[in-house]
Image (cartoon, rainbow, N blue to C red; front, top):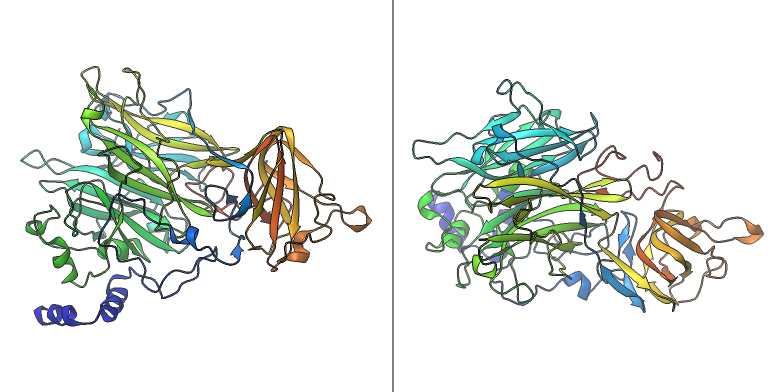
Length: 570
C-alpha cells in the first residue's frame, strides 16, 4: 500500500484524475453536455483550492450555450441564462409563513424537539402520505410523522419501539456523547431495489462528530444496518441527488482551508453515481487526522487516492453580512434547475441577547456546482417576536420543498430559547409555483427576447400574473425575423392569473397553429408584456401542459420525480 501511495503521488495530474475516476466515481467524463446545452470542462468537479470573498463566477452565465435545449422543465427567469435582451424588470419574491405554523410541534415524548435537521419532508405517491423524519430527544432519537395534507401531522405508533414513533435510536455512551447531529433522508424513486427506496445518512456526534453512516429502507420506518461509513468531515454535512446528471452529491461542512485562510465554516463537494460511492469518495482516516485546521488534511487525502475530492465548493462572500459563515447547503431539483438552500450563520454579537442565528437564503444552479446568488436577504427568516417559534436558528429540510397545486410548500425548522427552555418546531412557508423570480411590466409594455432555444414539443405555456394586463408572444428565426404564423398580431392575448396558461396563435384558416412545425429548429421567443409578471415559460408535448421537469420532494399531483401530468389531475 505504501508503494502504491508513493507511486500515485509521483503520477501526473492527468493520471491522478483518471485514478480518482476509477476509484472514487467522483468525476464525470470529459466534456459532458448537459440537458440544457451546458458543456462541462474536462475536469469535473472543478479542482478548487481557494475561496476568497469575491462572489464565485458562474461560467454558464458568462458564456451560455449557442442554442439552449428547453425540453426539460419550466424555464424560470431567476437569472439571464435564457435572456438575450429585455426591457422588463426582474423581481425576486419571498414566501409567506403559513398561518398554521408551526405545523409540527414537540409533544412530551419528543423532549422539546420536533425538527427535521435537514432529515427530509417528502410526498410518497405509493401510499399518499406526506412523510417527515425529525430530530428529537436531544439527538438521541430519530422520529417519524405523517400527514394527509402536509399541514396536520400525526405521530403514528410504530413497531421499532412499540408505542412510539421512533425509527432509530442514537444512544449516549458512558461519556454522554454519541448522539446524532444532522441527518438526511431521501425518497429515491430510481432505487435499484425496493429495499433501497429510502436512504438516510446520520452523523454520530462523539468527541469529533465525524461518524457518518448510510442506511437503506423500503418503507422509511424499518432501516437496515449501516451499509457504508462515509469519510471525515464536520457535523452539519448532508447529501442530495442531482437527477439532471444522475449523481449523488455530498454537501460537506468543513473548516480547514488548504489556502491558509482563517478558520471558518464553508462547504466541500463530492459526488458519485451511487450514494455509497459519493460517501466513500471522501477521505477515511483516524481521528488523529481530523479536519480541525491543525493537520495537513488535504495532503493526507491526496495521498490516499482522493485527489480532486472533496473540492472546495461554496463560501460566504463580501455580499453576505460581515463575518457570516456558511453553515449548510441543501439542494433539490426543481423544473429545469437546482435550487439551493444556503444556511447563513450569524454570530451572537449581530443579534444581542439572542445567541447564534441561522437564516436561509437561496441559490440557483444549472450545472449542479456553480451557484448564482442574486439576493442575499434571508428567504426563510427568523422572527423578531421573542415568543415566535422561529425566533432562532432556521434550517432547511432534505428534499427542499413540495409542489402542491399552484404553490410550493417549503418546510423549515426553527428554535426558541427565550422562555428558558429549548423548544424546536417545524414551520411551513408558501410560495407561488415558479415564484422565485418574475419579469415585470407596468403600464408601458416591456419586451423580453430569449436566446436561441430548441424544443421538441408543440404547445407553449406560461406562468403569468396579469389580471389587469396582457401578454403577447412571437417566435423569431435565427435572423431575428418573425416566423409566420407565430407573430404577435396572430397571438391571442393572454391575461389573468395562472401558473399554467396556454399561449396560442391563429394559423391559416383560423385554426390554432402548432409549434411542432418548429421542433428541433433554433428559434427565439419574444414576450411582450403589459401590467403583469411573467414567471416562466415552457413548450409541452401535449395540451395538458406537462413540463417533464423535476418537482423537488414531490406532491399529490405527481407519481414520481417529474411533472408528467400537467393539468391531467385537476
